[in-house]
Length: 159
Ligand SMILES: CC(=O)SCCNC(=O)CCNC(=O)[C@H](O)C(C)(C)COP(=O)(O)OP(=O)(O)OC[C@H]1O[C@@H](n2cnc3c(N)ncnc32)[C@H](O)[C@@H]1OP(=O)(O)O
Image 1 (spheres, protein in one colour):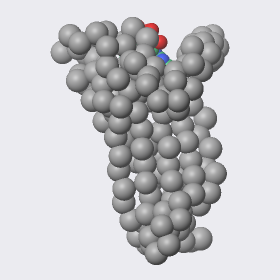
Image 2 (cartoon, helix red, strand yellow; image 1 turned 180 degrees about the vertical axis):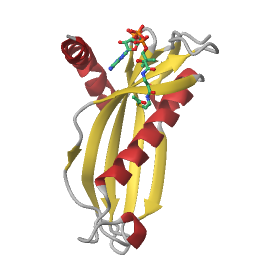
Image 3 (tube, helix red, strand yellow; image 1 turned 90 degrees about the horizontal axis):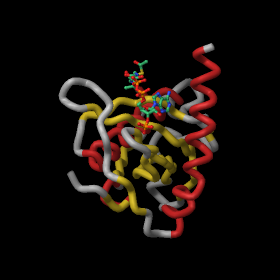
Image 4 (cartoon, helix red, strand yellow; image 1 turned 135 degrees about the vertical axis):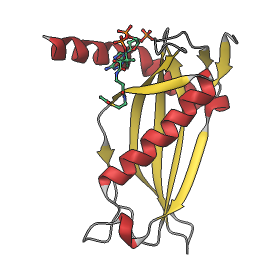
């Protein structure tokens, strides 16, 4: 197996137009729909990095920063920011795009953790990630602390 991979090799982008069935009575997209898009993009990024089956193990706090309205585009982008032995952290950014002006607003961000599984459904080792851009290095630098916070949260939930 390849032992290292660059962050950009997992980069995944998805764009869709928001239509009335996707929205609430304010005419803005349902939060659950945004979360489903984020999980989908992040899982593709994790599979591109590991080239294995993956499961979502955790999603960090999810902040909806701005609504996305009917007729706007929802633009989702994610990539693997760090790895441990069998787990991968994926950063996902969601933007709203006004398709008439091209103006973009940040709508949401999140970190998710995926675990790669072997053919028997057991956690399996993944390649280490190599960050290259300033943004990738910034996420990579904070990953150890976020990993420890998740671990503590998990231990508290088990007690
Ligand atoms: C509940 C649902 O249905 S959500 C829908 C989709 N997701 C799922 O179905 C996943 C359900 N969960 C699982 O299958 C298991 O808990 C797994 C595969 C994620 C982990 O299996 P475990 O037997 O607990 O594995 P183990 O304790 O050895 O941990 C394996 C890795 O997962 C990581 N991990 C496990 N749980 C979490 C968590 N909640 N948050 C972050 N990382 C986690 C560990 O840190 C470890 O990473 P590392 O090898 O890089 O250090």
